View 1 (cartoon, chains in turn purple, yellow):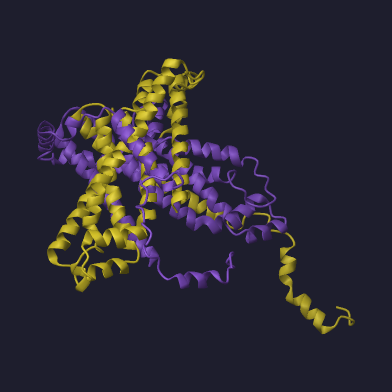
View 2 (spheres, chains in turn cyan, brown):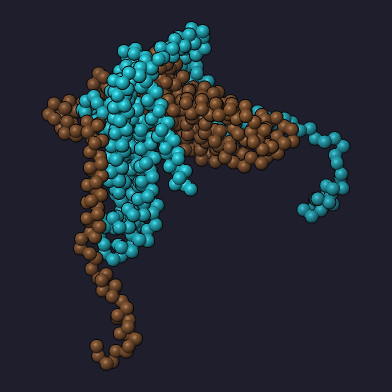
Length: 288
Length: 294
């Protein structure tokens, strides 16, 4: 039988027993053109090497006795931190300003995000939603520009001070929240809304009584999460002059008053640690 | 009621008063009063915040400020796109990406060993009850270091390093390396501890070393998640390396800062557009990579 049928082939193979010499197994090739992971890793290596080569990094600054000594001197200047009551009061006011900036900025952003999320979402099948993609483009643009760049832009019209920072936080966060809100509203079950619509209730009241109550808990949790982020962001916005702890920091660091800088840094760390642990325990409480 | 109507149908009409109530939806919003109340309460609560942040929107509308703003916005058009500026922009965009990549690479050098030290699953003494005291102290210290590194924002690190190593990308790369080292290390340790650790523990019970247990037990089951988180952080690093330019660490941010200080609206607008495109591109690439890895 010259052509083995599928039924006879296994029998033929078992009758052959083992080959006298097991075939040599070649080691796996390091690079194979058909392997996607190989291409990915090669591209990654090229990117990393090109980055390091093109950046003309000051390697001496990374690891040399001179750099270590100057770093040590720099850190030593931080001690002792300035804890005079007058300055601590000033730092406490800066911390309150930072908190207020983040809270007000987030509140405005939630409102603005909600207003922008309605045209950015298709709430029912009958909804033509012709504003959907232009609004989404606007939200993407708001989101793509970081808070710090917004703050630097707004300084020109709002002047130095915490208002520019608050507006900057509000603009960036409304882009983020608007997109999240729109997605939440589109994913809501359509039953309640359709029931109202079929009774002839107008779109505003459908939104109030069907869409909003269903998504409100989700919107609240998104807003709280962004607030947590914004407290951290508000602390550094001042570096370009937009108020809060960051403004104090860049002011005193610019004057080389390292003791005061150390106090401000400690206040920043303390604030971030408090927010982190509070949100961690809250989340654990809510998940329980 | 006429006598012809059966008791049954009479019952039915009595049973359905809500149908009649529903004929016309209420003309006014029934929850109107409570909405107004909560809105007013929120405004009262927000008032002190507004005072603290000197939130006076009408300042924007003062004739002086309005003129400055209008002039600045008017200078946005025409965009600047002469050859020299474009060349500079391409160079700075590449530097931004390179700073992020180099920073994340150095961050990995920091994060991988620290997260291996911090992972509780790789402890030999936990195989039989509680962890020994000194390993526990070491793990706690490593974790505290990671959290400390992470909780100082990269901008502050950059401010510090600009003082120590001078202006330029070195400060930015170091700042990204330290902050992202902390972030990546902490999350890596969390990811490694999250999954099923049975295989790893079996390996260690049968006498393999901790590194072997990691490479053959823990890594294969978490590799996709670890890689996708790293790619996501690389995307974040690109965004933050732009911001780092504002304190003098080079890249697009520094050009943006310069143009803004010179009130050159055309350059600002072009740089902002390039920046938005860069962020969108990084977003797409990272989303695509993460989907391919999943």
